[in-house]
Structure formats: structure tokens, C-alpha cells
Image (cartoon, rainbow, N blue to C red; front, side, top):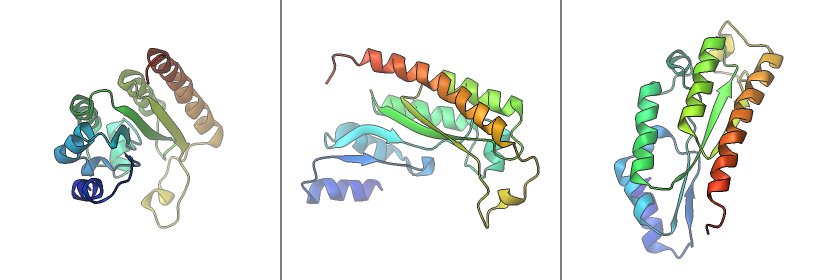
Amino acid sequence: LEDLLKALLSETGIAWFRLMYAYPAFLTDGLLEVMATESRVCKYLDMPIQHASDRMLKAMHRLGDRAAIERLVDRIRQRIPGVTFRTAFIVGFPGETEEAFNELKDYLQHAEFDRVAVFHYSDEEDTPAIGFEGKIEQDVMNERRNELLAVQETIAGAKGQAKVGMV
């Protein structure tokens, strides 16, 4: 991705680039450096994190754990000062306990992302999770999603206010 972005910057006149849905494993130091130093690359990153509970991350077959996610987010923010950070979470993955959900909510409050999307888990054909026990009821998923979005609304409001008057 780093090489592709460099080639696009050097060989095109495209005004700006914005990385969308960047998988965490591909966010190398070199890519972050290009994002930090190239004026045509937006200081915006859309990186799905999915959850913050170690147990849920493992069940979702995500790389790493909460500590690894926290280190990556810190590294991104250090390498790209002022980065606008969007992420996505899933609520209601089979086996998500109240404790796991509270871990996610705690992380959301701590991380203070600029933008957040929250999706309900849904069964997808040919995925391991379709056969998992501990399915979460739709009304519980709705409550959890609404709770996370309420937390995020406060964070996004404060971040937006801090940008009033900026270009």
C-alpha cells in the first residue's frame, strides 16, 4: 500500500488521497510516514477495530489484543499529529457478555475517536461465527449500539467544538 500510494503521488495529478477501511496489519511505519509528510494525503484514517475485549477479538479472529490496538492507535497519533480517526465496532457478536461490552464502552471513552460507526453482528454464510452459541438478541444489540453512539456523540461534539474557527 505504501508503494502504491507513493506511485500514485509521483505519477498522477490527483489532488488528494484518503485511506478508507485500512486493515491494521497493513499500517506500516513507512505508510504512516507517507501519510504524515505528503500534503496530498489526507490526515484521515478509517481503520476498523471491531471490539476491545481480548476474548471477543480472539473469537472474531482479529489480530492482536486490546493492548496491541492501543499501541497501534498511539503510534498512529504520534506519527500523524492531528489525524482524524474513524473506526468501526461490532456489538452483539455471539458470546458478547455485558462485561465484554463494558470493556468496549470503556475503550471507546478512553480512545476518543473522531468518528465511530457501530454495527450489529449478523450471521454471514460460510463464516465460523454462524455456528457459534451465545447469539445476542436484537433488542440487546440495539441497546448496546445506542449506548456506544451516545458516548461517541459527546466525544464527537467536543472534538467538533475544538475545531471551530479552523480550516
